[in-house]
Image (cartoon, rainbow, N blue to C red; front, top):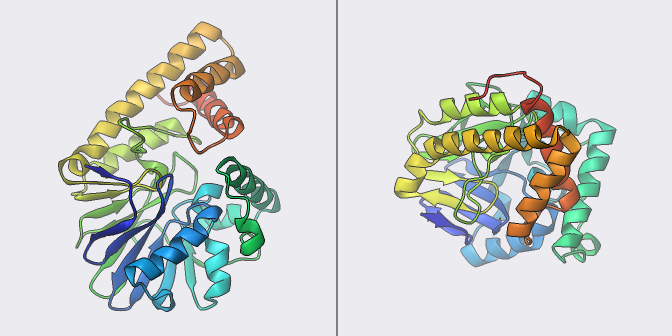
Amino acid sequence: MRIRQPGKICEHLWCLGREESCVYLLEGREGFLMVNGGMSYIVPDVLAQFEQFGIDAERITKFLILHSHFDHVGIVPFFKRRLPRLEVYASARAWEILHMTKAVNTANEFSRSVTKKMGREEVYSLYDLDWQDHLKGGTVREGDKMDLGGLSVSIMEIPGHSSCTIAAYVPELKALFPSDGSGVPFKGIIMTSGNSNYTQFQENLDRLKTLEVDYLCADHYGYVTGAEAREFNLRTIEAAREHRALMEDTYRLTKDIDVAANTLTASFFTENPGYFLSHEIFLSVYRQMLRHVVSGTGKNR
């Protein structure tokens, strides 16, 4: 079952934010861990949800970034400034990217672009939201475990969507936080986005399918529970195969990456005009995926 409303998922776990941009809160004896940085404009929603659900923000001691794309780090600067003792963690590659001036400028530009598209521009006059490349934190790697007291968070490095993507898994809850390293439960479909390396993306789906999952906590469009959660990574493997075949077929017909990317983007927005990403950002994602898929680097899985 797919659930898109914020609220308590189970003991020790909450979903916060908005349908298109979810962040999660894990509660251990040692305090709270926030998982995923979401988009910048959800800050007022998250603050209101703290009040609504009786969550003491002062108990948030750790923040885990799952990858460095703009729509997954947006609220981190605000909370780091509000809670200076907050410990922020990400992969080594994510920190490398988040300390690049060009990458930071692009993230801030994209954040403001999507905020405008969603009609929430006023948040920038109310909150200090821009990422700055001096923000620092700790590094987590494959096999690391974060102890929250009663809950342990296992880290898996799963590049493919981006070169810096990690997943977090809490065995005590059978809760998986795959970021965009798994499928996105959009509407009734599963979207797959192996932006930086589609073959790596598919290979890491084979790793994720081995986990016992009762709660699949996606960064976009809510979380999945029960039987659908248990089958979600297997279904994503098939969705990824179909999406790759679609990209290959479209390129075969057009013989041009830009034309193919425009064709695929136009088709998607015709069917889904309200999707949160702008046409321009979505188009750049398709160009990136197509370059890999048609380059011959990696077999068709």
